[in-house]
Image (cartoon, rainbow, N blue to C red; front, side, top):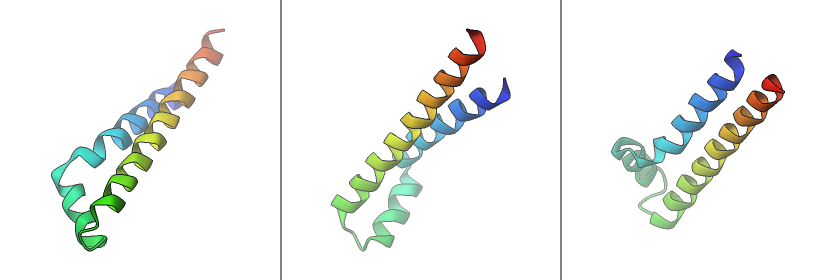
Length: 65
């Protein structure tokens, strides 16, 4: 029962992380101010977090049925 909750929490964290100022500043510095690459990385993190949440829901469904 802990694995789905862990996956759900990690998914939310991955989806929320690109919205922080610290994360954005560090990536802008890493990509030398290329805003397009920072947005692309943020979208990647969002999709990865969404995949974690979907896998958590699949595990919860499997546990309950």
